[in-house]
Amino acid sequence: MHVAIIMDGNGRWANRRGLPRTVGHAEGARTVRRIVEAAVEAGIGTLTLYAFSADNWGRPPDEVTRLMKLFQRYLFTETQYCLEQDVRLNIVGRRDRLDPALLRAIDNSEKITAGCQRMHLRMAVDYSARRSIQQAALAFTRAGADPDAPQANARFLGLINEANHSAQAPDVDLLIRTGGEKRLSDFLLWECAYAELHFTDCLWPEFSREELRKAL
Image 1 (cartoon, one colour):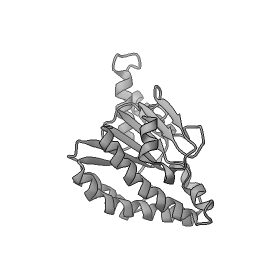
Image 2 (tube, helix red, strand yellow):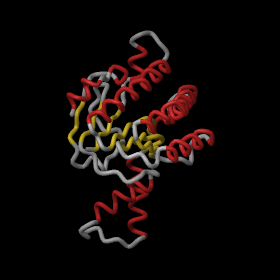
Image 3 (spheres, rainbow, N blue to C red):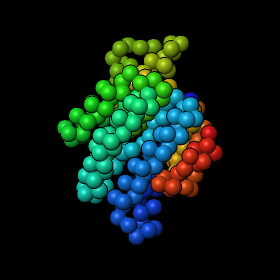
Image 4 (tube, rainbow, N blue to C red):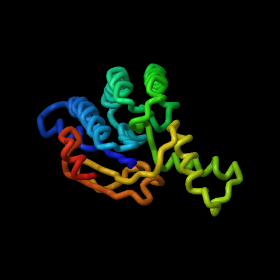
């Protein structure tokens, strides 16, 4: 099973407590560990988490900087855990706009966990589904591929994964969005063509193993 999660509500979680939004993001990072553990225990094959969209560059510069530092710190602290749990870690999305230090951390984490097979954990950073489809369409056309061929959809999905620096991943079976919104926000549009959609009012920092179990 491929489960994808739009992790929404970190900022609102912090605002309701009179805390800086960055505190909400840090709490959200702790929730990631909890949900990754639960996903491994549940036997999920692929878990894709929406960490930072291409549109998120429009947030206040200080918040973006803190988010990127938090993400880099996550890679340093969680790579060993992923290795111990036999979880392959893969960052999907653009890489040409990321800081060189973050790129080195990504490369290191992906190399260390490349042989892990229990679960494929993908984290979407600087990700846009629309751009992914555009890049794949260009490659599909340049290759002279036939859109009516029996394996055309599978080939196109492979090109989308390639555009996002992703190891091969199947279509999404279940999409979860926390935080009460009911929209896809440019996330895995092609891969969610036949996905079940589960929306919950629960803010991401409060999302629990039990919430994941309910969605499953």
